[in-house]
Amino acid sequence: MVRAPTYDENGMKKGAWSKEEDDKLRAYILKYGHWNWREIPKFAGKSVKVWKSCRLRWMNYLRPDIKHGSYTKEEEDTIIRLRQQHGNNFLKIDLAA
Image (tube, rainbow, N blue to C red; front, side, top):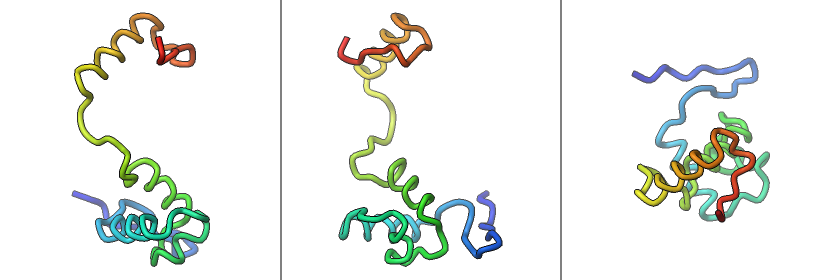
């Protein structure tokens, strides 16, 4: 069960994104691009979400080039091989290796 959204002292909506909000943001950015994140909520009809929330939602969930789902066998093998070579110190990993 999803918790009902709350609003902060400035009237900005907090909480989970609805499908309608996702659709509005996706449609606006695909049509006009992301030219100014601080202005996008106003023009996309999302005045109840702050610009940072819109930017993070786009970058982490809504972009068309984001792969959703499980890793392929090759990706999983690469992760295992790199972890065996370098341990958990991901800063030293050279993906071209």
